[in-house]
Length: 368
Ligand SMILES: NC(=O)c1ccc[n+]([C@@H]2O[C@H](COP(=O)([O-])OP(=O)(O)OC[C@H]3O[C@@H](n4cnc5c(N)ncnc54)[C@H](O)[C@@H]3O)[C@@H](O)[C@H]2O)c1
Image (cartoon, rainbow, N blue to C red; front, side, top):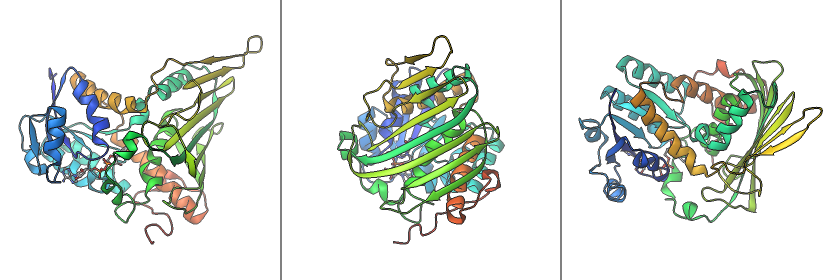
């Protein structure tokens, strides 16, 4: 087992500061290099983070023998090539979600990592967000009995948080043209598809969806999931409220999760934003002689913690020799779910996500 992990950061754009904080704070991780082709960007990040080496070329970072593992934070359409290059160089890889722009690319990345004998995982901050982790543990412990319905709601509005104001607008271009298979509904919703699978640890075998076009192609959208358990359904809604300002320390969005079970229900009342004055997790147990609501007000509910904990989890797993989440196989299922939503929206027919092997774009995407 290694005593420490020496990490290289690939891409110092908008999201880097959230992810890299978890590596910088880890007592057994050394961030030794950062790479970005935008002139001056890698150097500025290296100076900011106290990192010794800055590269403009990925090949130079990958040739650095003092880099054991990399965090890939580049635009999604580049993940495939960058992950293949990193595993060919013998580096362990943590790659930001979405894993790739197609299921075929993601499978090729997984196969390459297997062949090279290196770890490849996808960094999914929602899986490490403490209120969601707590809710999942309660569900697994039987706190609500047998789950029967998962509801996931996303609302996108406006914010002038320092984080949002500080974003480089160039980081949005690649999301909103043909370099992405669907813009926000792809880039952000992968978190929600991942959570729909993970929260109840069940597979989804059928998707029906209505996907409509508006300003950024992310709204409105309504989805019905059938899980492989016939007693369990899921629904997902994505809405846009362009005139609604919301409290947030990050992006102008928030999410709410509700899981109904035979014996009770659980809410996660916030995620990216801080809209509602509610404890982050609320549990109602309907015991006949003692029905009661329990709240969990003291959980760490800072959305940024999900990123830091996800980074720390990668380091801990490399140090312990255990398999980190999210595995490439999990990430493939997430992509299949995403494209199944597009396919179902395009055809208005039921789609089995397991049938998706490539990529699907919503009708009319990037044609403005
Ligand atoms: N977990 C989340 O909630 C979350 C939030 C935002 C973004 N993301 C994901 O993170 C990734 C990056 O998003 P972003 O918003 O930071 O984008 P961005 O465009 O702001 O940053 C990407 C950076 O990668 C750099 N880059 C491009 N080619 C490179 C190369 N060959 N070598 C090294 N660096 C290179 C760019 O110059 C840029 O600085 C995307 O996959 C995105 O979907 C995740």
